[in-house]
Figure 1 (cartoon, rainbow, N blue to C red):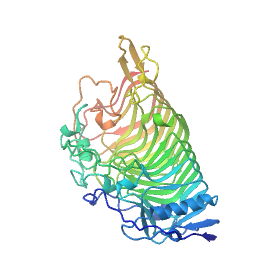
Figure 2: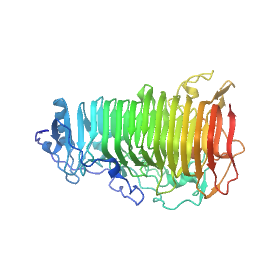
Figure 3: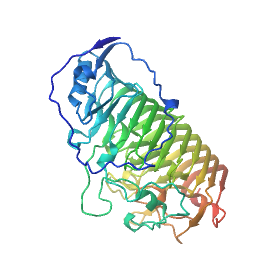
Figure 4: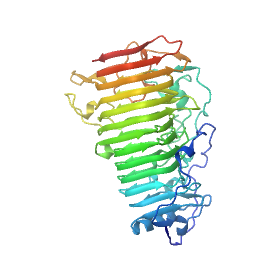
Length: 515
């Protein structure tokens, strides 16, 4: 190992937090039993080759002191040398946005961290960025931290440690400000720390970065043996990347900071996520393909992961303009161990903006205290304003979800039924447009309800879910407690068992326009 460094003169600067009034942490914001020792190697050696220690470039682990220039000088020197290791040791180093380049290993040792400043003006969309980099590694057993609580307002309610007396879904169309205090949505939304002015107080949004770690159009990437903590927005965004391995990683977020997705695979292909533990507020592992990617994505493999999320533990959607295909998720655990309500959904597969989502296999999944085990939703939200066509073709009319296999699922502590549906509507010319899911196979599926009470408001006619943001607890009640399906061509239910509450009054399965 060759140590390489260069002392550099720099002005010493200290952060001036943008929102110093925020940042209070409550018991229950973080999951306190994270099994770090099962995922992190605290004795990982440095790789061979040139090493660029950020301390040799002027970095000092002092509270409030900014080290952006020192870190970037080390990264630039590493790039200019044709590659090497950026070495972080000796404490927590505060900094603004920093960039990584080709052939770089970022090695943060256990007990050390790079930490995002709370001064928003020093952050350019993300904390740690790489654009078009090849052969990039982030590792070492240390931490990347985002100071997430300092970019969002305090919640209306503190975390809840007692079960809800009853499960209650608000009727379709109920806005957040009118939610009854008994509803599931009220009880998780009031505990979220938002950036937006959700309560119409006229105070405007806070400013915050889009992502904590943003890898933009990178290839041959390995993220392994690292802790990502306290994200201020999306935690790890893999945007238009090719060939990414994420392994032995822990995400430890505040479970009430809004929009803190764990891992976002955004228009990326050939991605493997293996043996990771995620605890976060928003979607745990989520696949998206919005307009900005400009391309289809494929070949995603997720396995041997444990996910805690207030929202959806594994999701495809919602941003879905381009196609997503060939996805395998297996041997995972989705759960909420300590706070209430539980996870919003376990498996959520959505196409809302024209994507064809196809060839999806999800198997060998255990869930505990996941409210809705399975949510498959095709609608025509049309976020990217595709042009209207009278014949029912094109992205204006939504995409497709087809060839989905969900098998060997066991969910304890469920609270609402699983939903599987496409849609039917009329064109402006009065022609019926029917968009059905195709070839959906559910096999060896068991869900056991928590045995609390329930408040039901089942409408006489369940309207089509055409334009709404796809989320199971905004759909409202249906006339089945197990599986409710509508507009599906080729639905197989095999070895399906759902154990209801003692107070149940509904049938287990209801199907409408299912062929």
